[in-house]
Image (cartoon, rainbow, N blue to C red; front, side, top):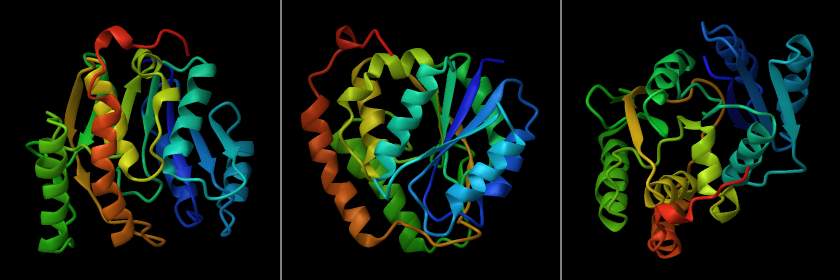
Length: 249
């Protein structure tokens, strides 16, 4: 198995973080570690993560940031740390169990023959939580398949999905200095950036569950900002080619 790191951004995930770390570190995957990037959570998530890291030396690491700085910068910081520390497969996932830790081995297997892997809700076999309303299902499908798919001409079916694994070489080639988005549009941006540079995605079907604990951070304002941000992403990267891949971590 490649040396693997799962990056988990957190903000007020005290109810979830211990459960998630336990689930990830007990997977039947060799050389797997976890990096928590905490934005000074008022509920003490960072402190809990530190206590867990002391219990799991060399397997769980924690980066603390001064405040809530956004999803995009949290992932970029985590990705940079992974590259600096020699990880070969770098994953990203939510802390709220919307993404099932037990799916990580399937994503890792798919990464053997791909530049990046997305745990996808919208390929055959992918499913959404049955508790989602018809309106919420329609909005999510439309955002991915119609809005993003049409504007960016993306072949990826789940452009906004946040459960992913990247090859080290792919993240280096993307040149993380290019990334600008810092909200939920971040997922769309890094997908489009990778596609324009000629990288290939594999989409592995997953079941996407509603969070069991804590509060959702995806409001209507966030959704609207992400929708409008697609045009900025297109303008920023549409002229990129594989010849402009980065070469240094």
